[in-house]
Image (spheres, one colour):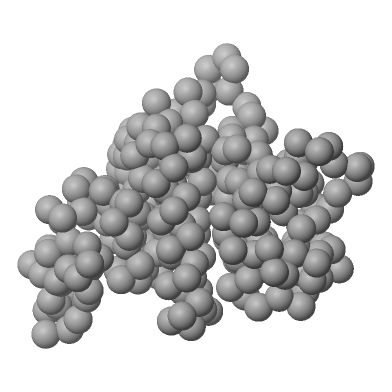
Length: 259
């Protein structure tokens, strides 16, 4: 089982940040984690990445079960490619894009040994896939936010992760940059040998056709979970938001508008 959360609670100062969260994901099943700001998305990601432990409930990730022999936070993180805005400032700003991508092979910030030809070829292929070959020699700090995001996705793919988590990767991007990045993500998701993807967002229009399932989070609880086309409808989303909205689909992607 790639991910199996059972009745997860996360409590701080007597307050439920997450309450009774259950979520199952099998390999190759791409999911969207959707919720408004403050819904608890970041806390769920911290649990999946083994940065924090739940207050109660059962947790299994990448065939490792919390509290059982063989469970290791480091082993979990080695199999997860995680891209979020928190990584931008952690990168060596003076490194070029190519070096930053290669650093993913070593799970390091920076590269401190001569990469093998195999690693170089893998990095080259990933850069081509993500459309970043024309700026691989530019320093990371000189890249736009969208360009930096693509580089970090490339870095995450270098370790051939079993799970790729993209935490609101289009934040700060204009329409053209956003759509170009989403096309690259769609391509990655179509690769049968690629990672399972969890895509985290609070923008419904970013939900791509590769995503068949969605977990709707509200106030730290699972509002609903399951098939995207069953759940993303006007009545359901109106109940989630507490206001009347319309949900339609165009080119197999949802469009949200207020009634």
